[in-house]
Length: 367
Length: 98
Image 1 (cartoon, helix red, strand yellow):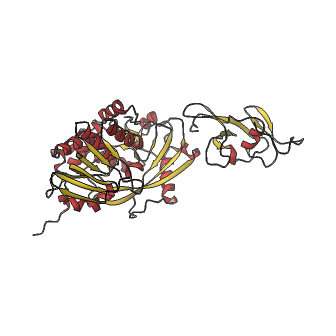
Image 2: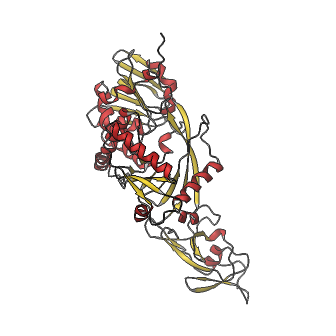
Image 3: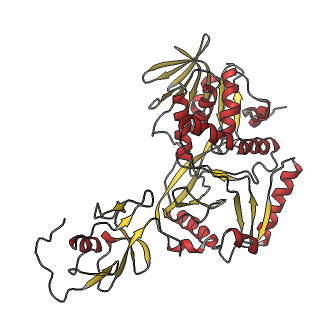
């Protein structure tokens, strides 16, 4: 058979696009490589973070704000489709500041967001205001910026819900499917897999770091590089900190996550105890009571980074019907990937909101 | 359920207190072993569904034997040598911040 859409990459981006296309009636195959892939979607922190996102990059800011505001719908639709609770909680997000200078920087972030037309609700809390929200706040915290629009979610339950919703709606999820080659053919594309070719009228490359290798076969360019982030997880603690925050959050199950680092170490997704110690130290400055809490493990995972840190969405000009999508905010943007990008690629045209996110922006003009 | 290979507990045995009850043990016992030998198996209550849990792996990996020792929460009884005078309580649900 020939699917309406083949999605290469079973992470958050691919699964959201695949489900989004499927729920508007397209026949969809989602090809997921397996645990040999780097799987950024299984190692991330789980924030839907809007305050300060895309400062100086209005298209990205507006895209992120739209995504944040569609998360309630995403949660409700996934729950209706699968019965799964992704743990999404719109508690608001706190960016903690340890000096007046850091608070001033946050005020500047808000001013620049407003200057670009970003109508985000955001306020500033001094120590007294912060103590009302977080009674155990540490003495070194001078204040915080707070946006009630920020939220958090279990990225693993989100991924599971997207894949489940795709399958419950009649889509095909194909695990263990390494894509060797993609070939344009009459009426679409043929994807070579270990169990034979998969045919699709249209195709989306959402293979994270693996997209760099596959994109040229479709006349696309995906100049992505790994950036490592490490995250520390503690034993479960009775719920006491509901908020999303820039350096820690408490999961629905009670574990605290401390994150996250930004490291240029190539394809090394290992860990370094010195980095974990730094993450713990920052968390303890925020909530000193955490000192008594045990760490149970920490891990490294590779973000998928473009040269300017913004997403790439593009259609191949050489092979129309071939698309590529990547970003390092697969959680925040999951809603727009499902509701906007999925139906759009199934219909064969990208939405105007993402017109500026083609990889052509990285080309150097020669005169 | 558990029986010591060498029966009997020597006189003048050291003791721990578990939920207010004095438990004699042999020097060298882990806290989990001492409690199991005294017929106590439910050391904690799961934070997920509040069900009672017993020590399982006895080697520090399963975290089923969590107890509160001298006010410290979420301690692994199987990795903690029993010591005379310890005051031990069940770990009920997830730990709290101090």
